[in-house]
Image 1 (tube, one colour):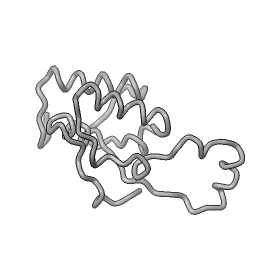
Image 2: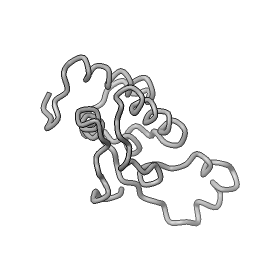
Image 3: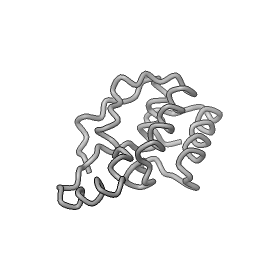
Length: 117
């Protein structure tokens, strides 16, 4: 592995299994973004991060869902229609590398200084 936070092989495999299971991805890189690249949002994102916290006992103090993901309610027909008239909201990306850091340190990283995309 080529990361600042190197997980042992078993832990890394558990993390990858969880990511593949809850995102449907077949392959990811360290810079793969959960929302922007894998298109995971709403309930799917909530489930993924709940499972990460549960499996690896991660302190989620710095995780603020609405900074990183859309809510699924935005996809109801009437709300979706009116969303075309609003400026598209940008979200702070979370990468696979961020998840590795969270597993390694047992704490979700502070990402508020990262540029939203």
